[in-house]
Length: 320
Image 1 (tube, rainbow, N blue to C red):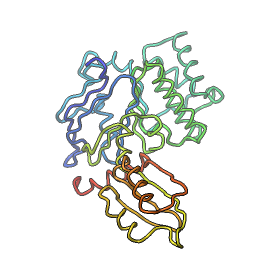
Image 2: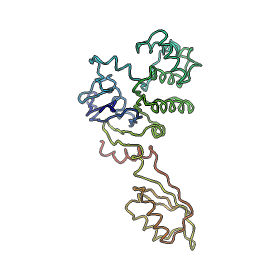
Image 3: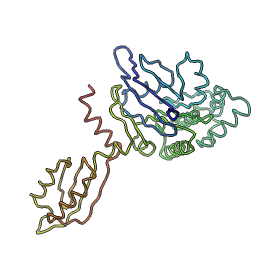
Image 4: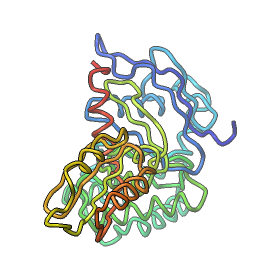
């Protein structure tokens, strides 16, 4: 399929007796921001290294832009010129300026002279690090080094961008800037982003699809909307009737509904968590027809962070 830019099929990788990646399979489609999520030590970085050809799997196959990414492939050098990579460690050269670092990396991409300088200038302006580009990177803060590493990943307009914790160490303004850069890249239709991050608010804003792993195994995959949908939180403000906000019999009637996960009455608010968000209308109709007086209704879909924690908690016993 031409729109598949990354394909992993039944990947396995062990280090001694530890299984770091255990049967992972997935596809990443051209032009999307794909979220790859999991706790520390779950196998995310190992998976990225397998896709990039930095490690070889014990079994299984990887295709990156339709090619074999491993070092013995004759296409490896040309392939690496089509991708950008930001790993968790910045790996900048401290005895060089930011400009010199980027020129050096541009040369590794095969550029020289005016072409390298043009590419570096464009990238510096995109990431907005020109002010410090002539300073030695050993004088940089952690956030500045991270922004330089992001600039390195963006050199030469990559077709696929691998980002491992891209906003680690960045201040709020720089985080928003990086998020905007990713959104612009994807909206241009020229770049696909493979994003691994613990910042689930960032993932929720950027990604349409995500895959969650634990102990090297796939737990679940789907769109962010699908993962958030199973639970919905509802707060209903009630008006007292005969000195009572909600009759005890009605409370128990709502509590016994099969799609009500939890129920709590606090003062004039009835708080519910629903397994089936589409049943909200049924809840409202039941309350009103049974004599309850409703002042206000507030509905909150669970966040991706809520979904992530719920999913890993519910699967915990199956992952050991």
